[in-house]
Structures are given as C-alpha cells and as structure tokens.
Amino acid sequence: MEETFVRLVCPACTKNWQRSPSKLPSHDAPFQCPDCGERRRMAEFARTERDLMTLKRLA
Ligand SMILES: [Zn+2]
Image (cartoon, protein in one colour):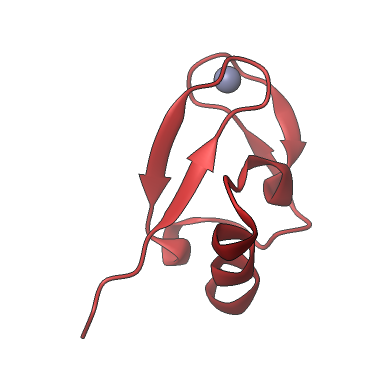
C-alpha cells in the first residue's frame, strides 16, 4: 500500500512538516502547532489545495 502524507505548514511560525492523514484529526477539528502552540482548525495547516483534499478524504 502506498503511503500518503499531508504536507502541513503553520500559519503562525511557518514550520513545515508532513504527517500521515491517519494520525491527524478531521479538517474541521482544532489542531495545535507542535512548535509554537498556535491553535487553528486542522484545515488551515494544509499547505496546498491538494493537501487539504487528502486531509478531507483520509483524516
Ligand atoms: Zn507554529
């Protein structure tokens, strides 16, 4: 099985990272940046439209 990742970027501190969508909450759930602690909806951390679509499909 091909491993899928969602690429993330923090809107506050611009940290870039990626995670398996199975380890992320759904796109409308709250999420906290592991670096700076910024709290926003999960969807706002998706780097591109494509990452957001992967998140909505699989998280
Ligand atoms: Zn941050």
